Image (cartoon, rainbow, N blue to C red):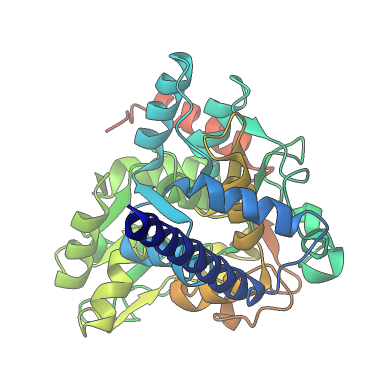
Length: 379
């Protein structure tokens, strides 16, 4: 009997020593993030006890890596449960769950549409300022145009973009379309390109609507109406299909495309001569861009893991994680202490910026309503 008690005590002591070792290891990793603040250590300890954080985010390996990479290294004992899906699908699921009294989520990383329009009316989001644990995060000196410029919502409280939207209009495959055939927006309407342009559905919330709205701002309703109705444009809601068309020369001009798959193909040596449609020749003195993009962050109220949610939010906006994110996704951070990965997509002096993730969001919706009156309907 005595030997049994000794064995139990030894096992208990070993377990305690192991727990202490793991705790110290976790703290050493967390200290490497450079995050600090009066409530940081206490909240991190509570998050470790919760054990996990649940994040909803966009699909695609590039975004997934940017949003999740480094978390296990920095916080090895807090599991990151990442759930990927298109914004419309994820948001609809969360709205249904909350209506049923289910609160399964902590963080959402997404674009403005339909996130804000769906979550603000049901009071699903919590104030971000109150949840950021490192006071240096909100210092204006660390962000392009100051910290507040990154808020996407009108109240400047609930949805925040740490990145600069790339502002792509579209792409052309130079293997099959020469500079003589396409070097300005008016060439979209040439006989040589009729039937060769794919266009992401302008009624879908995303890159297609944003690119369409930018062209409307620059050239007006009549130009856009003629373009969409009379020049053999093929609409699609399938980024893979559009990318395949683009690289195969089936439809070598693509408007409003998501670049995730294209980037992967180019790394594999496919579509190497696909180039961006950019510059005054296409959008005059306008550009698409500003604080925004599909990786803005929101914090749910009644979060399932409230302490881990605060830790994730603070980490996501930190200098270390923003540098990782920029390098993995090739998207510039708004943090001024993070080196730009695409200097060519930094804001240009003397240009006007159409930012559909902020003040121009209502403009996009009004344009979509007008397009319906032209006899063009949702796909």
